[in-house]
Length: 227
Image 1: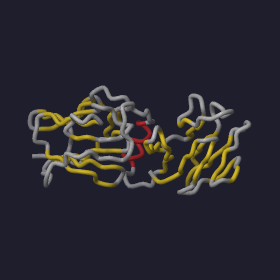
Image 2: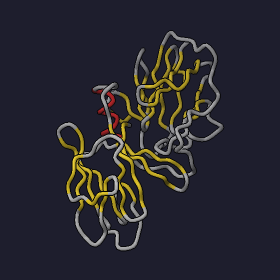
Image 3: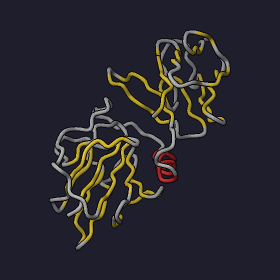
Image 4: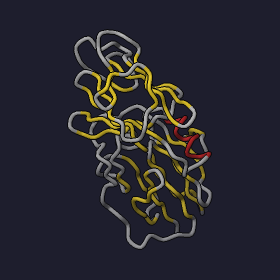
């Protein structure tokens, strides 16, 4: 027997004994392991029997499946391998058995029909190098759902155009602000224009963010928080 433990960051979300030849993983409710997160495809990957071993097989996911920081299509699992998919990961235990398979969703408030595209490669490398390290993110409301976008790039943009994080509103520029990695955290930089960028209600041009800071651009509200 073997088992998979679903992790959200460093927090366990559920255990699943590998008791079928294929255990599907994804957002769809017909998966054996349901992960309700916009960075995860509806049918993201499967854990399949491979002789005396088990393998993870990507099912054409939008954001990819990663092991040890490398994107994989098929990978024979070794004991304690960490399979990364969005902010979730699967820990493979070659000799474990779950106390009882958890059939409920690992809900984090990011479900939906459309997959949010994230920089999976950078996130996977960060988790592989130090799974317990502190990671920061931006939280926002998207169609009534609370969405978390990990800040895993050197520069993350906010704006009304082809920005990493959408900020809608009258006179909001295509790139209205940037969140840039800095020693000890992130800087928020206003790129100029008619619209103000505010942190906790105060206009800013360049400021160091603190956990819990609320960023406002027109009618869009974002929270800087730990991932």
